[in-house]
Length: 324
Length: 265
Image (cartoon, rainbow over all chains, first blue to last red):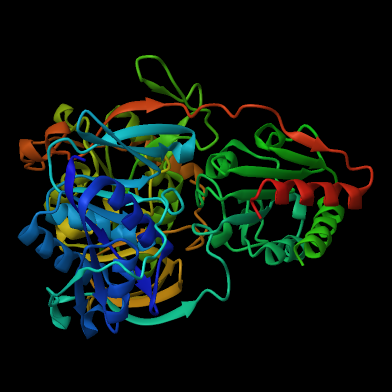
């Protein structure tokens, strides 16, 4: 191991830690001999024990009202200040919206490199090499931060394995104070309209997506029913989003989300190159499409040529029966 | 009100990308276009310009090719365009690029707002916006899906941001860096008049001396990250197993069994 000291920034929301943060601890454990977790929030003391169970040796814990809502300025200033004091070799983040905002902010404070959305890590000649998709996965890039420290990386959700929590592990908890006072933080959070009961695309093990073939907003109903039976996230192609049938937050592709679930079911999606770019790394791909010549079948592992309005409800019914 | 939009030129999203043995990336005969995400930033700038009687300057860091993105933004309605380039900027990562943009914006007068797309579709790091806000000391408002209120006199701004957890409402101060996501607006097409204006517009090029850049903070020397290897992902092996669908229920049952056997559900 070339890294002695790895830190992981822990993302949490309403008392729950993002899976990608536990995965980052899992990745840190494979790289470093000492792993520290940074948990900044309000009412988050209980999360410190969880972080230790998931593999942290030490937790920097800040519990303060100024950290109640996620605000990049407050999180970054504290993390940068601690990093300047302790000099970690590497700081890992989950490549979520928050992680991808915080990582480059801290990198500016520390005048160091930040590699976004890493999907694989390897050590070669004593150097840490990170693989990340570019052009939404049409190509891959191997990157490194050769000189500067700490190395900052955000890790794509589901690309790294988290450890099984071990209640027998022990670790040190270090209480730290916030770096900024309330009047030094420009952003004030005034509300959150929660996304209702939907599985997020980034974390989803299964995604069921609809495309041009669904034909209308109502056409998404059978697609959604299949998603619900599987506990899957609902995705969409750009064609369906541009037609106004489904909100943009569901879009998969080069101008939407890039995903890599275990199972991706494409319903009525032809598979334009910009959609393929967003989902080609899925472990198993199923295509359901009327057109046997649709490019999606070149990418798929299983294909059904047929009308999605017949095939999808039949699949929903079959899975209901078999999974019951 | 002075609004700056940061943009970049990228290969069209429909481009087939390839890499040769020397590691040179090619997009075939696909056109270079304005980064699609940035069109939302330009549109939002133009809407705010009309509302607040403002002025919009579009900037891009890049060699001659970057003119395509700037021309498109001017054709949409931006007032002025500046290309920022110096041979010493080649190889800049997001740390160095954010420095170059910050130096540029600090040279401009009375900037109230910087707008940019949430990411570029080529390198897709989404890092320059947050890094730029930090360098400038501006309020960081990334992933904005709606500008709810903006008061240039009082120097306040309220936005809604699209996060995994939902829509977050934030009030903050100007100047700010606002990163836009799709759905914030519907970008206009360039008008015929706009295209003619863009064709005739003189586009100054600001170099390292013009933006007073410290040579140790730009290009490869000013970067933390290097990317020595770019390669095409291995092609997927094998062909799709097509499940006969004469009987839809049978096909569905067969597919369900295969997915269960593959242990993905």
